[in-house]
Image 1 (tube, rainbow, N blue to C red):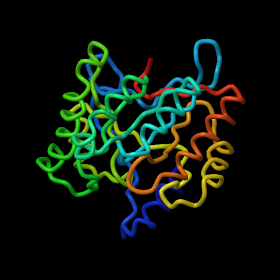
Image 2 (spheres, rainbow, N blue to C red):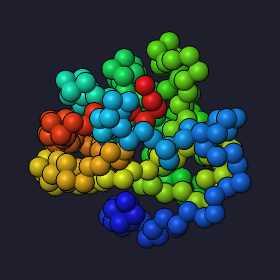
Image 3 (cartoon, rainbow, N blue to C red):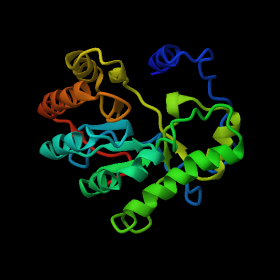
Length: 242
């Protein structure tokens, strides 16, 4: 996990890799009654009948590739989590609705892909809360009672002590990843799919991209990932829950 995060960070030409997470904040534990914060540290690893679960996540959309990915997920009876950009979601509401209608979950990747490292409180609110409101407005009639959009993936995996505090205070849970095939570099669909199939384990969160550029390779890789891992018994679920 950390190795890939740092490699990605360096490749994106940020001179400072993310600092290690400091001592946890003295707030109610994520998932604890009354905390309001989703518990992403204890995602189910298996279904009730014992099938291993993989959590496929997609960043930077929606885009012209999103529907292809939704169609592939549907073919294999799977759902994903789409960490969407608020400004793009606003322009493509039909795709956000399609995600929810297919059992996938649209989550928060900020409004404009701004790093959450070094942001002041007002900027944080503008990037994160505005995106949440965009998603809720688009999907309100489709969401389950009480369902909210409190899962937040920081662009580049970057946060700092201040923005971690802002997120906790506002009830957001940061969601990073366990498996990163760096599909955004477009190394070839087979390289991407081989990496995920090789590294997959029950409960793992996989980082892929449905936006931010040409994602033809990511679509092709997704088809192979779904085919090969479903043949190993995996099912594909979103991180929000059933």
